[in-house]
Every structure is written in structure tokens, then in C-alpha cells.
Amino acid sequence: MRPRTEPSTALPEVVERDGPSTMLRAGRVVIVIPMQLKRRGNRKEIIIPDGAPLADDQQAASASVYKPLAIAVARAHRWKDLLAGGTYATMNDLAERLDLDRAYVRRLMNLTLLAPDLVEAILDGDEPSGLSLVSLAESIPMAWEEQRRGFGAA
Image (tube, rainbow, N blue to C red; front, side, top):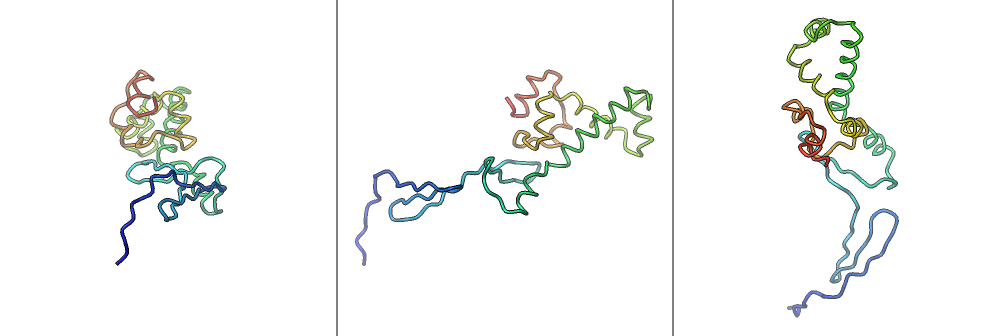
């Protein structure tokens, strides 16, 4: 039987490398990978720091924006332009022409009320964690500061 040893109270030795760092702690190797977990809808995504090396297939995946949310915002602004330009007189006309449910069109049109920095973050794929089309469809406060607080962007 081995004698029991107490864990070392000394600070771990850190060996810095490009990307992950390796620490030796109580005779064990611990690899620390800088990353952040972000909720997007019903799934979690790993976000790595800018400039970290990626494999080719990972670059394509990380470069893509959370498409449903970005598409919804872009669609809402396009529809707003069509209404403002007089192409369609009402949202009901627009919904009928696009063969979409009127309630869906109205919910998406609320996305045009988002604060500009939230829209930019959504289009860049940097929206606040947990922000989804479902959470935005429920209600969007009119004041931009309330939006930032409510959606976690403050």
C-alpha cells in the first residue's frame, strides 16, 4: 500500500504555449483551453478567442452566424422597407402575398424595434447568450436600455 501524500500547496507551474496552456498540478498534467460556452436557442456552442488557430472545417462552422436569428432580423428589415416604400399597404397584404401567417409576420416585424447594437451583434453572431428567436418573439421592450438589460447585453 502506498503512503498517502497531501496535495501540494505550492502554485502550479504553468507552461504557456500558443492556444492551450499546460499546468502541472500535484503531479498531474492539466490542460487549460481558453473558450467560452454560449447558449444559442436550445443548444450550447463553444466560442474560442479571436486569433486562436482552427481547423478548416471549424473555421467554416465558427464563421457562420446563428442563422435563424440573423435571417429573421434581415427578413423583418426587408419587410419594413417594402411597407415603407409602398409596395404593400399593410402587414396583412404582405403576409398574404408571401403566403405566411399574419401573426408570424407581425412578430417578426417587432425585430425592427431592436437596439442597433443588438442587431449588429446578432448579424455578427455575437448576440448575448441565450438570446433566441423565441425569446425575442415573446416581447421586445420599446426602450433600448431595457432591451439591453432584458436580453443580457448591458
